[in-house]
Image (tube, rainbow, N blue to C red):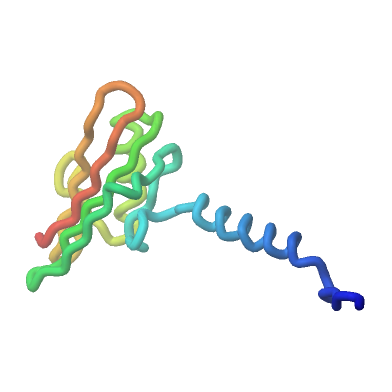
Length: 122
């Protein structure tokens, strides 16, 4: 008895599906769950550094990213990019938008530089 065959091979289709999902994640233009906070090229988000709380006063969000970038380059990127998304400068590495405050903190002097993004009610 002969087995019925599929109209097209499934292996190539599955491979394309897996590669497509991986490519979508790799693009990562924004930090996970934050469509209003871009991820600077050269930084990679740390999945273990994700915290999100909703409070009566607003959200509290923490994300961590690291990469072979300089503190000056990070500050420059966000100073140029965030105002286009409604964030207003409020000091070095700090921004406000509506009732929220965003602060960029840095850890590590050598590579990789770790950047902590903290959003709190303003």
